[in-house]
Length: 387
Ligand code: P1T
Image (cartoon, rainbow, N blue to C red; front, side, top):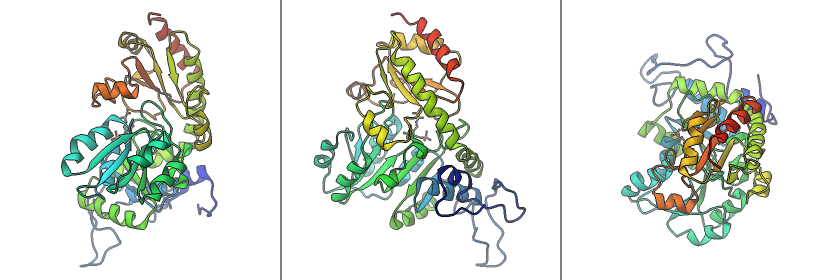
């Protein structure tokens, strides 16, 4: 069970950070469902004092994901949003964050409706257009916050190039790697300084836990995040930590199948006469196809497609049988959603229109079911859509 320093990705996913349980030899890290630890004497303990500060299940997950992303350390939080918010606590009133214009709606909502009133400033550019990044950096900019691929337009940002622009101006690069997963893309190796995940998605992979994690490269960030995880206290619980640890063991095989199904379903949609436009980085028609092929190991499981009207989208979403109409993504089961009314409902309509999040846009998170069953389901639902 000892990992050597050149262990490969799937081996790291299964083993990194994990030792047999010291008390019993259990191969799987137990769920340490405890709020506190008995101390042998005043000031004498085994390194565990209180459940918010230390928990062996959570700390095992943190070591595991730090190794998977190639970071110095990781810290797990109660949700993806809590993880993103923890990153913002490093900043001070007056600081500025430059953000990819098409982030998850909840990220936009946190920035605009919660953190702006504490004096942080945010502005948004299409970070896939490198020319727009430099001019948008101000002397107050502390972070370049990139989502790639974006939710739900699947726009891809060149991470090495964007990071070089930011670093030249002393700005740290944060990447929300939720849509890609570390199997497809490892931002720290591509120049980023901080990585964040909603573990709710591909890392856990089974739609049965909500969580978030931050992976860091620099020691000063590690020190702050360790402090703030305890001081602000939005920690991930032991049960969720255990579920995600189980999830990362199968990340490689799930992502291989996700890539395969994603490409096949995107090609099916692209060729279908009722579909006006299919957006998937694996299609040669995608504007960032070549970049995605270079930067990512496969194109993932998210596909967006436009049916031209709300009525057509409503018909399709009412007709699918195997695919579940639901928010979220990255589970083994295929989910289908309507970004304008669901995940991006908190984004103002004129902003949605500018980003291309039309009322006819549908998003699929492709699971690992048999591809023919998925195609059949979409085919019968598309039959009901008026041409
Ligand atoms: O839901 P939570 O675990 O808090 O994660 C938030 C989040 C952060 N970043 C990205 C890129 C996300 O997609 C999300 C959550 N997204 C959805 C729930 C969704 O259906 O798109």
